[in-house]
Image (cartoon, rainbow, N blue to C red; front, side, top):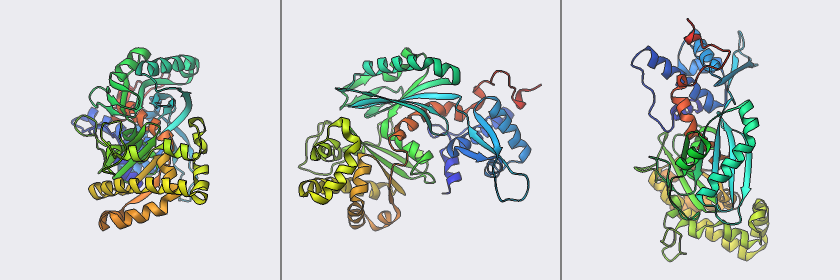
Length: 418
């Protein structure tokens, strides 16, 4: 699947595509497709947009003018190309409309101001001495947004708030059924944030958000079959995209790969079982092995890489974690036959230090067909993947129905003239 084809497939990630029944529906569908392609590409020439959509240049010009009038895109200078003829204008998404994206974790809550095109305009990290309650997260977000209001109100329109939560999140109402490491049970976090901020709110599992971001903008770009494993302070989460669709299951609870059994006599897990992947492969054990506190976790990779060579105890710990990770990956690869497995968080560190060993175990243990077709990648978006993916929850109304976005003051859409 080519990158432009994948971008088209990912348009409206969380929703069914718009299908035209009359001229208004056709216009809506064309605007949605164009905005989705521009959003996924970040920046695209008008000529490439024309070729991708298969429409004539005058129709594309009308579509571009309509989206520009709604402050959804920016038309810039012509791209310098070697092609014969007049250079094509460059089109990118606007930063006018933004989402407040939030990722609560054991040690910190991260807030980002995210614009379309996967751009994080600002990031704020609030450290915790203990896991925050749902109410504390809501209060912290409300206080931060209030402090940013002068800047936000002048430059941006906040269309909503979206959370990436390390736990089971209902796809129906955005409530958290269970986030064991945070101690959250049946918390209506989306409703709480909507009431506090006065804007629509969404929530989803953090790794499900991460896989969406990595497929659209990161290591999974160009592929419709991607598994994302994120290693964070609260454990390991999984997100799955198959045939260009996010796999969430009936209630939105799918993808809990962190609770894959990897050792029958293993450590107790917070879920009540034992030997789960996230009980055997932990960031805490890695930090303790090199005498690091959570506040210095940014030094983990450098110290682990050095200790892996010089210290037998650290090498044994990493090899044991790599072996457990390989068991889980073997199950994933044999079951789902993904093209890409993306490792994020501290799992990316494990992959960079022991990648060759991990690859050997996978090639030896997984079935030959799926094992030959998969590649392991680090998360290209880093820690931003969770925020960017969460923002997609709020951007989907824009992507599916740009006509619902009002024309900016002082502008007129060509389609609305007359």
